[in-house]
Length: 145
Image (tube, rainbow, N blue to C red):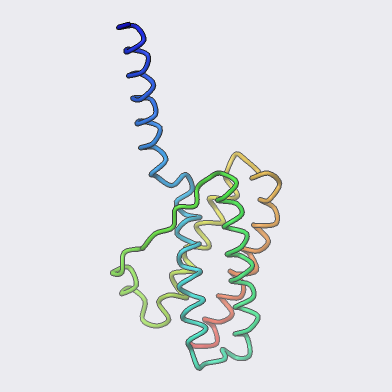
């Protein structure tokens, strides 16, 4: 009886340790980029600027990159989401959400490219979508300087 109780306790302990590991994002830079893309989309949609005619194309690129990131993270069961530190936006003089999204997309691209998995064949397409979003974000920000 005590042996069975020991096995049960060991199983619960292992589950608790594994559960604690699941609380941490496996790909934090991808998570950050996903969050910031949502914020950038909101900033763009609410803006009256058309960013030199680039707004619609940028929104499409943001939506495509968002979808790709969600797929990548879902493959690994890493869809956590979450808020970011609001103070980080104070370092940007203008368009803080767009600038933060660009910064996080670049970091996410590095993290995705360095990952040891191909995310069930989705990595190559996600990298293309992220590259397109990076190009669009840079183009938008050049129009407002």
